[in-house]
Length: 123
Image (cartoon, rainbow, N blue to C red; front, side, top):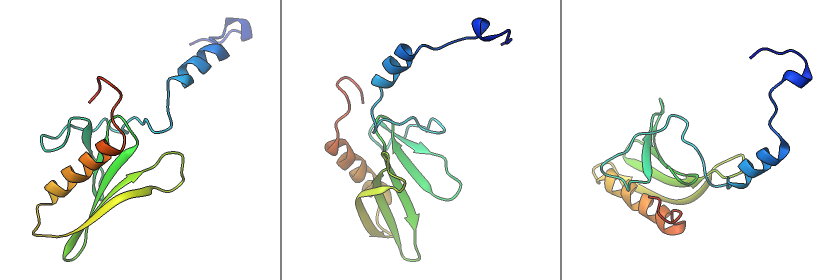
């Protein structure tokens, strides 16, 4: 866009900014990479690409599940970021490596869905 003085600039009035901000809530978050759906998760959850660990994020709320592997067991944590500087754990499971960790991830995703339901008509 060319700039030819203040009168010729593109402007977004404060009322339009306020109207757009009023549609947002603190716990709604956009996925950084869009995520990808998973046949093993509820349809409002996505698998998100991260180089250092497996992360699953709820598409309609700021909830995510982090999977951390240990020497003999998995630590699976359901968190919420919100406006905090650090994640707030909501629930967690420690499971042996031979246990079906996908089942545990599904259980935590369902627990999140039970904590905060999706807006009506969304899943």
